[in-house]
Length: 222
Image 1 (cartoon, one colour):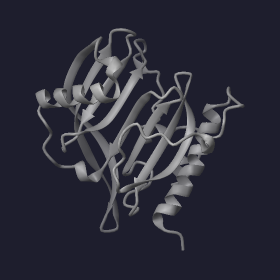
Image 2 (cartoon, one colour; image 1 turned 180 degrees about the vertical axis):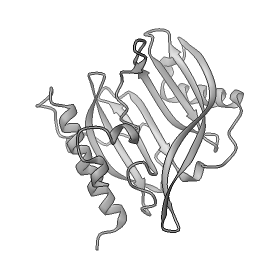
Image 3 (cartoon, one colour; image 1 turned 90 degrees about the horizontal axis):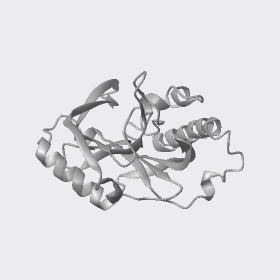
Image 4 (cartoon, rainbow, N blue to C red; image 1 turned 30 degrees about the horizontal axis):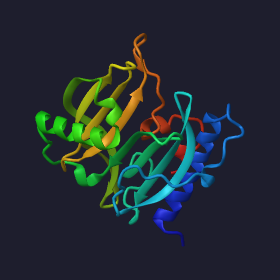
């Protein structure tokens, strides 16, 4: 009998393949993801194992989306726990997300401390953003997380302190969400925002709620 992790990993890989095939219709000669070198621009927690990787398109630029799930299979389905990274083919870390139940229900760092943590992260992983950085606001931010407890599925709230800023060099947005453990749990950069009608243009590859709405079998296969 297949383990929960193996079953979820196979389903997720199939779903990613379906979505990326649609997203890359303009690049039929794109090399398959399996031929791409492994990329870990940030440290992935040791309790996670890779479950899927695929080439995707971000504002017309090719990037590698890699998803990791817990090795014990806990909450490994769509909308559940995962650690995902998005890295452009040029080697730029476009973002990552650490959606962990371990961060739920704990006090958040102050706005001042969150800014310090965000700036330190940028110095290490995106120094090009610091010089023309203008912070818009620093506020608590909530994300839904689907978990199973005592055999029952429920949605809990994963909170962090979001440091939202704009890169004045190109007008694009970026942010770092600092978790209750005092570490960045989400980072996204180069976000294009359409002022009218007021919506995000950049694809949301790190957001499961967005993935579930894309062509393919995400919701059905997990």
